[in-house]
Length: 118
Image 1 (cartoon, helix red, strand yellow):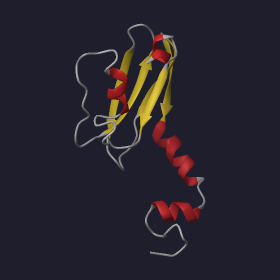
Image 2 (tube, rainbow, N blue to C red):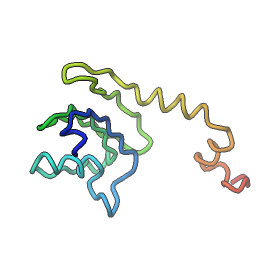
Image 3 (cartoon, rainbow, N blue to C red):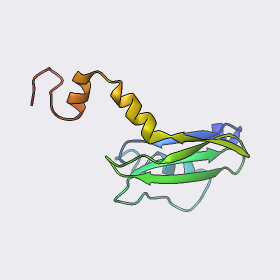
Image 4 (cartoon, rainbow, N blue to C red):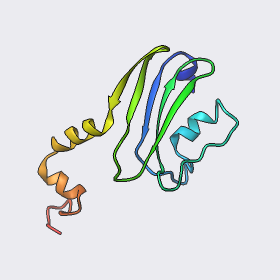
């Protein structure tokens, strides 16, 4: 929270479903410091992405995503009035293509980490 109050803009990508330590996700944990309204992600899209425009009363652009769904394009604020669009899905896909085939197969459930095929 202090980083936003001190003028540092932030793009928060929370790729993990809410759990016992963050029952409404990371954005809820950040945003409760600035807003009294409780935040709860939709049940069918529990992943939250938030872009913050920093300052004493920051603004947030929030998008939701589902596990296995397409990631949205998100703004990354450079200054209060300037931002760039971050192409999250195409960036993710390019990074995934660069993974070694062995680890792609592990992530896709076609191979165990010990090397045995499933």
